Length: 145
Length: 69
Image 1 (spheres, chains in turn brown, red):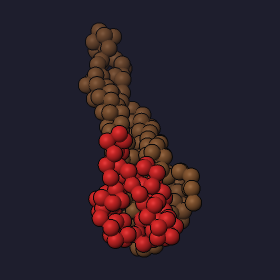
Image 2 (tube, chains in turn brown, cyan):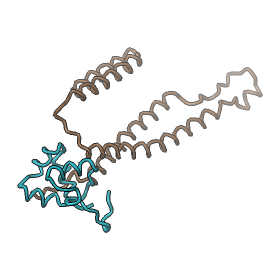
Image 3 (cartoon, rainbow over the protein chains, first blue to last red):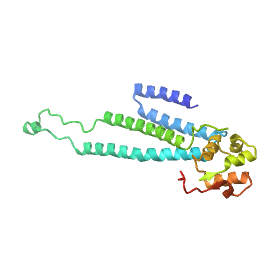
Image 4 (cartoon, rainbow over the protein chains, first blue to last red):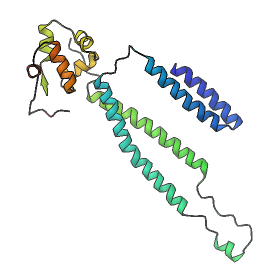
């Protein structure tokens, strides 16, 4: 089911890029996640005991703790960049009206790449912490039986 | 926190899988508790002791030399 949703989302992503309809992909992405969540709730033979819940909880908390620092650092960088408003160069003031174009504040494409990098960081952090806590709470302990 | 789950399992001739199924957790959780890698919640500790029909203190006991996780 997850694979099917992923393939459909990939196709929609491709379509959205080709036709420049980002909103369509955003709606499809949210719908896909909701669909997966509803399907997950229907599964009955899946045991999520308190230990696995604790591993998830600890990994999520630690991820958030590290992530907000990274996100805050990036946000400060972005705000500082925004506050550094485009100034007209000295040449502009000397030759008023000539074609001196002020620099772009912060390229939107750059923000997109940064967001993507932050998202990847979040995923890597979560997986890393999950492996760490799973090991700590004995997920790969050898059996003596 | 130390425990005698392994001893009680042996007394009742149960495998980790049997006990896990009986109290509704995974076998890995029983293994982790037995090895002291995971300290169960009070609810789970009570379920285990009720299953063996003994008081909770007879299975779980606090060891001051070991830091709980």
